Length: 167
Length: 418
Image 1 (spheres, rainbow over the protein chains, first blue to last red):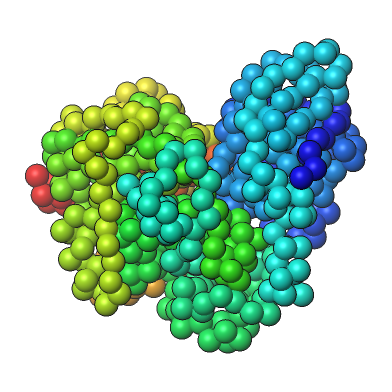
Image 2: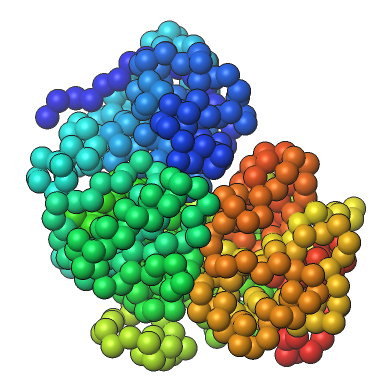
């Protein structure tokens, strides 16, 4: 079992209840993936997607991703976000993160631990979030190995492909 | 209750809150959006076609080419695996209503569907959960998925609800008072449940998605068991909570003390108010009755009785969307549709359309809507600058006549029995 550790520059969205309609607005349903990615947070933080670099980490508030089954996790991954750490993560959104292989961690207090732009190192097995910039850290909820196994396999689709369920 | 269901389907003698379990899924409900949102693969093989149902609901009839193509994919999948439970256009409806009408959700079972309001089927004592499109593909292929056993909050309903209070009002009271239930299973019990119709229970269970509950569960009392035995031959075994079950919290709701409620725009938890305390008069541009929560026959009946012989206020669009083709047909037979249309309403075909801002009732910038549908996020029904208030179908119909949000109590005489 290899440790899953992700390090990267952060973007902070501290407000609670950021929902799937903000992440994946209905207006871009069925549009090419690139257009859907461009619309992420277009209503609450226009222009943000152009600032994101491959490898960045999203820090969020309580109940992040509340709302629909829309595959927002897939869009964040496509944008270049490599991990999400939130005060808490909505159940359905969390499932989508695991299933699309976007590592996600719940860590109460994380929005106070991190200022936007800080570099953090996230230890998914232990749940520890280190702020590399300030040297402080916080304890979040360790992610069970069973779920990290799905993430490490690249999510559900590669697993189904390997077992011959899909091409 | 949830622990018993998850234990039963994971082959364990017992589970506790926090356990991670892999369960066999009893029913997997695939939707048109499952094919339209990035996962349009037809599997090579699947575990068991008999646990699968396919329902077209979000984009009916297809408003775009992409949606029409998704419908074609759904039909291709159904044909390839000879899926018997297929609800194509004309025999369709909003999935959660179709599930309840056809006995697809059974007490003590696990149901998954690619829609966040899947908790609706908790009205029938079924552990029902919304999942994402790739997870649905996994469940269709393997018959299994994982759950983290949630702790449970128990709502004990007491007393009898007043005639001007509906399932939606009860939910809005609960969500306004207690806020989010993120990460919890919520269960409803107590003598007060008896005064709730099946539709009221389904409304409450459906709306639990808005307080971010993992599951919502009612007990299967004699009303539910009798209804289900009338529509399915499949055996089922309901669950109840033990006397000594552990709960994260137990909350008592006296139904007899409740009044009609509305949710103010943008979110529901801790954002609802009794209508008579709304303050300034809120003028509306659109009134909408529909969705999995409140497009039921009883909603259409109440709306029709309220507007009978009256006219929708000038400047207001009143849109009514039946929750299923069956509801639509019955509403036509009983004359509700002609009553609504005569009053100036539009009655659309059954679809999720306006509720998610897809089609047939999209809001423009700055418009105000009162709706009995499910969700009022910014931009949910169209423009992010629109404002969405949520209330019961009675509140929506009364407001459509008044032109502003109003308590329906004054127009309910003869509509509901006291």
